[in-house]
Length: 463
Image (cartoon, rainbow, N blue to C red):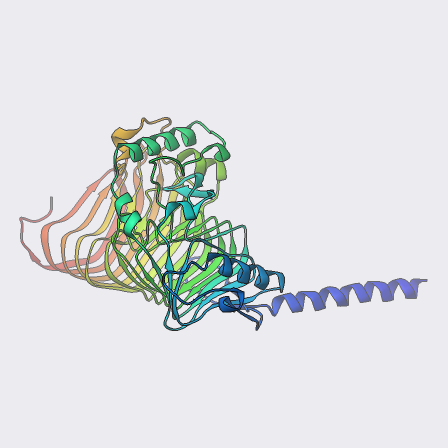
């Protein structure tokens, strides 16, 4: 009896080890170096199975809608246990694409995936977010919800048609009223399922790519040309790699990549050419983020080029879940951005920003090399009231080894008198020409400046 029991236990242990090894073999590990503890990132190894959209009825044309054919290919790939859904070379037209677990949407070289700009194609609405507030809105053009092991890869291109979305870039009264309505619902804890925003003239534009509450993500190699709203948005995701992307989107709110309430991500070897900020770290807005209580953490951005954009690295202003452990290094801005490193919040956000690092950056002209601003409200300042005040704790901002051709100012730190920003280290920063002032510091404690220099000051010293 004892011998049988021991054999049974040994068999169970053996089977458990075999299953663990089989599971482990589905992933390879990508290591990251950072000035904080961070585990390697899992990259899923997709099964060697291809599902061409042509086999599911897709017709090569920029005028024939292939939405259903792509959906059928994704469904078949998922049911088979995973693989690649292949968009062959040529022009293809689709509406929204909803990914499923273990599916790699593969864009072959010279494939161009056009997206319709008919808003009704993006209904029924899906659970998404708009500037840090959860709601139901038009489906993102590529969307995944509660999936794992999902990817978009290949050398092809995503290219949405923009005629309608460009009209929606404007913010008429109906749109502003919709923002007020959503803000009020979020501020008074209205259930998310009651926040239906894809109605009437609200015109809350959809994201190009949004993965919502997903795990083990890969975006690799493809091009993006234009976007209705934020371009790549990772929302409440865990584990991912974004690499070798060529992103160009110059419309309104066209951030390059937004990582929001998301953890364990590597962004590397990408080019961003944006009409808004390039790389943005966010963490939700006000009560929604306090409810979700999910910080953004363990983010590394390296070896990226910024052709154009408002900010190289933006922290906030949606920040209410907290942000920690971010490291950007070895990036280049050959031309100009408004801010190289910008931490922005306001008295409604609360939470914290801590342990944020920028290192080894080369840039052309910038308005500010480093800026912290605790009173950034944009259109919301007069649009909606303050329901609750919570001050953001800012502690540990580190900038090292940065060179700029010119700047209006090297750094401007505007903390909050009620909770001053602390422990700001600015080291080995060189600016060729300073056009306005060197530095301004308010409500900030323990600012450490080491080897900060410039060649020419065109105005009268520090202010």
